[in-house]
Image 1 (cartoon, rainbow, N blue to C red):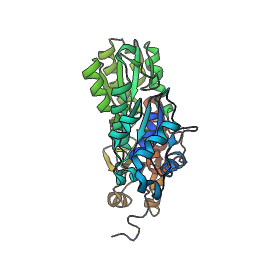
Image 2: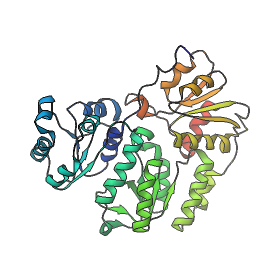
Image 3: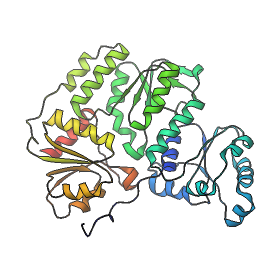
Image 4: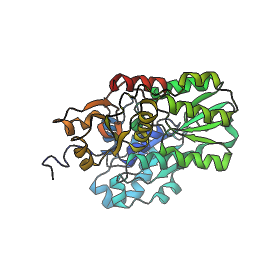
Length: 358
């Protein structure tokens, strides 16, 4: 076993951080049930956006001894904005205490409770929050024509919404507006759900079943994946995308990394999309995708990889190798201070990767 094994990577963002990150896009008030400390994890470490507001409870051992459920109900009713839907999130301490969420729902008006416990990753928090809140808030009577919902976005995995700009402009050119689900309040687009992470799939499936809204899944990294994405849009939206597709015609670039051994480390959904781009746009054949937390495989990759596509937090694993790094930030792991202008989708993504692969 390596002497450096299991001491480099920080814990990934927890489920309640994922829930908070998701709820920023919804017109709701957010409350963390916590002794008063979990909110700092979200605001000071995980959340990369400024001015993210949420409420947080405070209680101590004496409060717990007196009966925490009644205390929480009183504190919530006194502090909340009753004009907005209130989403109440659990944390590790409330899970240990066995907080009764049914009592809270019965005694707090217009609220949704989501019993997070801090032992799942942010991905669970994002998925469950989207599904639970979406089911209760999205209103069938507020469907918007010619509007496409972006489902599953959070900066914890996609760093910045700017990543999607090129494709949002394509949608606009086809005559469709788009927005992250929740930003229109109870309104939502009736045209299509574009699911940009696996966390958005559960809600998209429910919306297809309930509202007959189709969905597509994928982050089209590079040219060929965007070409395929356009083909999907053409079938569902009944729009002619022939001229747009000319900008994304498959053309493997001189097999510039044909013999290069490439490792992609990070969130699996995005890693798979990057690997597809490397194969179809650049002719890469020797590619391995490694989960973000598999330190054994990462240490082994340091001995054979020529190119590593990952967050900069993984650089200590490769101190003694000559690997070339291509940075793709993973905010859920490295935190809010890992800034990068990396853009992976479409032609912008193709050019970004090409610059480093040459």
